[in-house]
Length: 206
Image (cartoon, rainbow, N blue to C red; front, side):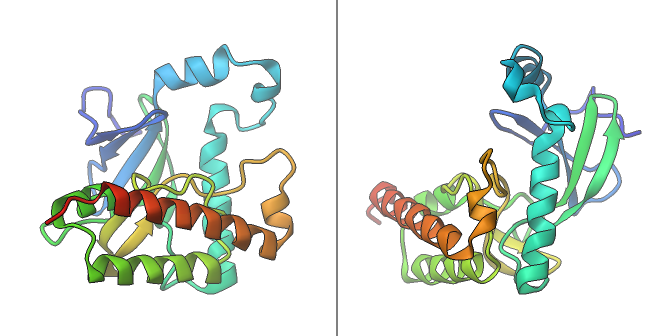
């Protein structure tokens, strides 16, 4: 069991806390925050508590999407972060993922932060077009596609490139994105264009 109770998360979101893996510098551990479990599970309406995996249903969803994307488009250029496995911690079940990193080993910047720092350049446009093409070729269900869930960096598969680190997989009760690839592609295109417009609009004039 990994001891994380006294550790400081290196990133936090609305639902999860992200910790550096104690033994592997290139891995991270994502843990569902206790406040999120209370708000989104323990006190949630009954129909939201039907998942057999309970508050860890997001781990199951993302692992399923990772496997499906490899099956569909191959391993080397999968546009979502590599899911390594699950391990128990002293603050709950943890999802082990590979860190997408900067050249110095630190966490890769989000697309939002990357564009804020360097502007929207020809390189940004090229990387976004490549990322979009990989989402489609792997038939990724990009449920929450926005500039805070995509990072620009490298991992064991190469890079630098854009990688989606969160918010992927089917969330709908009726899994219509999983049932029809053309329908999923249409939704992905709309979400990508929305993210592209917002990213360009928020880019500083450098």
